[in-house]
Length: 122
Image 1 (cartoon, rainbow, N blue to C red):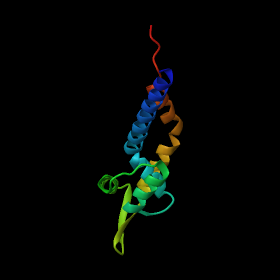
Image 2 (cartoon, rainbow, N blue to C red; image 1 turned 60 degrees about the horizontal axis):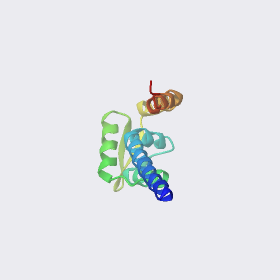
Image 3 (spheres, helix red, strand yellow; image 1 turned 90 degrees about the vertical axis):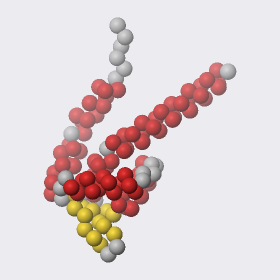
Image 4 (cartoon, helix red, strand yellow; image 1 turned 90 degrees about the horizontal axis):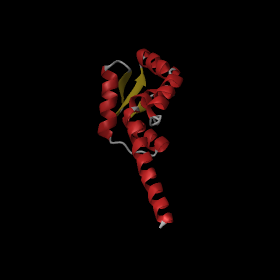
């Protein structure tokens, strides 16, 4: 009985962590994309492959292209046609934005740590 409870708790914890992992990736996908674009231009398909290979998460093309178009409208990336596919690269504004975001790493970690801290009961 005790072993069953432990295994059940481990399965539940695994599912919770997997869902949290997915939420974090999806909520920070713009930052993930811009950070990877620092290494060179990518197509939408390249972005989908990168996220799948790096984070073991398959995201829809609709999600990725919608986000790329949004980043383009905000002047953070520029898309250009290269034969039959659109290639995206960071703009100067995008480079400054991602640099500032990545430099705030410690502040972000602190915020997340405070957010997830278990409050002691009085």
